[in-house]
Amino acid sequence: MKYLLIHGYGVGLQYSFFKQAEGVNAGFGAFDELIEQKQASVFRWDIPRKLNLFESINPIINLRHYRKEVTKAQDKATHQALEQELDTQQPEIIVCHSTGSLLLYSYLQEYILPQSVKRIVFIQSNIPRTMSTPQYLENALNNKSITMINMYCCWDQVLWSLVLLEGSISLG
Image (cartoon, rainbow, N blue to C red; front, side, top):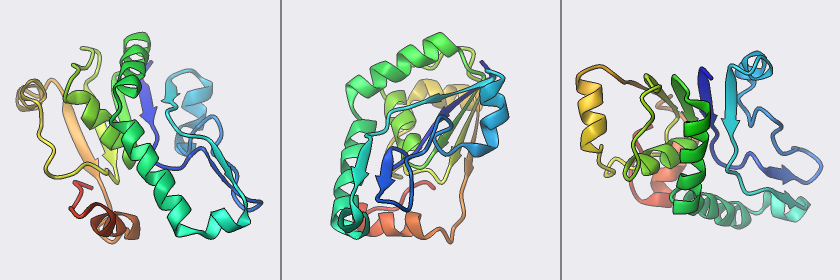
């Protein structure tokens, strides 16, 4: 497997009649062809939920769901499931979006990546700046056996809203 894709927040949410939960690609539409060709796979860790119209427009409901997914992203059971997926797929490249970046970086605090991994790509990462880089990963980055790319748009309103929600600035 060339790519392992780790999605971000809310891909399992169905917002009443106006937004379905994400399908097989978990929002990674650019990878559809690679998923079909089995060159990419998605690690699904979302919390599926159907919201009625009122819940869909209620920011408190969405905030609670977001916090549940942040907790799940840092949970040992989620990390064990990710470890099993990594061992099975042996990806060369891991692509993480938003809270999926937090999941991977939390995982990296306790687990070591398979040697097949050569690149990590974070897109709009939701990783607290206070989270440390494990020494083994720092060594791999320094000797260039792993490259890490952090892609973000500084004007992204979601990342700025996280400053208010989390009380800190994310790496993204």
